[in-house]
Length: 242
Image (cartoon, rainbow, N blue to C red):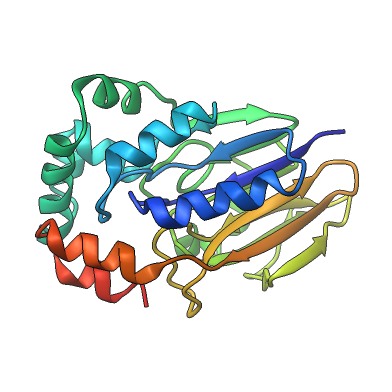
């Protein structure tokens, strides 16, 4: 049975993304999924896109990809984020732009659903907004396992017999998932963690053991922060990496 790597929100942070791929390579992974927001905030969008394309990663469209292609979604961002996306459009090639906008808002494989925000296919809705009504979220899709990003946090929810849990801790290391229960896994962020720990985050899913392993990956934060400032992007995008 395959082992999967699932990441989200690299946000044009090549230092973090490269270190995550190095860790993936050390774990005998069979397939890799990125849940969107490959671009936005960060200083190396073209390089990150090139790396993900080279690695043949299955990419899901995130809200930052939507903001890149749709003025309605772009206007939903604050001014610094809008400015970063406009800068991003100038920093990537036309071919990369076309590649970014060609991806779906959800994907199903290995009996799992992959989506950026909230299933079945929202790139913009945050899963934590449904923490008190999670049963309706689980009812909106059929798969037993769903992986989401967007919040930049690590958490999980479960559903059994139509009843959903409150948010549950998803700690570093291995969590064995109860096989007769449905699970929604919020995988954290590669390029802009917001959970109080500045390491890049991603998860491994062992389909044979039915276990999720959260990986914390250190990287050269200063190098990315310096590049953000040198490109004239908002300094907050650099400061919050720490």
